[in-house]
Image (cartoon, rainbow, N blue to C red; front, side, top):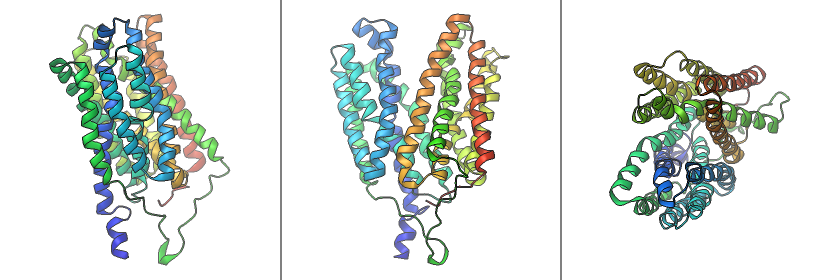
Amino acid sequence: MLSEETERGPDSPYAWLRLLVSLLVTTIGGVGLWSVVVVLPVVEAEFGVARAEAALPYTLLMVGFAIGGVMMGRLADRFGILPPVVGGTLSIAAGYILAGQAETLWQFALAHGVLIGLFGSSATFGPMIADVSRWFVRHRGMAVSICACGSYLAGTVWPPVVQGFIENVGWRQTHMGIGLFCLVTILPLSVLLRRRPPVAQAGPQGQPAAAPKSLKGLSPNFLQGLLVIAGITCCVAMAMPQVHIVALCADLGFGSARGAQMLSLMLATGIVSRLAFGWLVDRLGSLPTLLISSGLQALSLLLFLPFDGMVSLFVVSALFGLAQGGIVPTYAMVVRDFFPPGQAGARIGLVLSATLVGMAIGGWMSGAIYDLTLSYEAAFLNGFAWNLLNVAIAFWLLLRLGRRSALLTT
């Protein structure tokens, strides 16, 4: 009995193996967020539509991903992670195969919005992070951050792979190939995730596990609402460099290729950031870490204003990635610290979906401000203002709830 708990319990070797599998699933399943961006120019030419219409599949994908994150999280809370991952994999495969056979833009867009976004890739991010959080106690912050790196790894690996296949075999064959690849890789990996998370740990000397501590009069739903607002505000700010750095470089005469390299650098340093802030969460707690990461993102945003040289923008892009990478996974840790583990999937899914909404709003808003001012300076200042609101929320929560006033053990 004790040996089984040691080998299969929280922070056990099995938990670390499970984390590795979860990272692979998140990276492979994250293709849905990136392939649609790469294929946009090809779709525009294939269906003879304007650029705004060609972006419809991306818009529907993000909406579906946001809604699906909550839905799949609830499903994982009730039945475990295996059903949503298996169902999501089948949906991803069907979505890509049907997208590769689409005869109209609407068919292509619906395949992305419904099958790939709503029922597919959404199962491989938020629910996976929530599941990982249930398998760790001592190293929970690091484990959650490692799993969250999957989205950035997907953004690093998938775009060049998809672009290469499109150039060699065409976009239709590429999409059908992606569907089959996800099917033959994620399904076998999901078998290793069939075990349900361990139950709440007992206290010392066999005493019952400690109950969640008081939120000091704060309503759980109010806290959830604040986290949703925080998720939106931080990602409105985050979207400015991530969505528009390529266009900014083109405007400055450096070329889109340099901008794409800066974006890749942001994602790469973002991976380092997620690991570093995961380590920090395990030592300082989730709320102090959230405040630090949010504050650093605000400062790094301001660095884009005085610098417009190519080398300096590479440096600032790297610094921005190092600052912002820890924010999103830290939200998952806040949820795990202050809510029962049985609600983790739905609540984490809701907060992470809010971050996607923030990215969508921020990307559009920055473009609209640029159209009005013909400069990104006001757009960066707008992002900084939204970031300050996020800092204010994190600071208020830290003052109200303290470092670890509601830290749960599972």
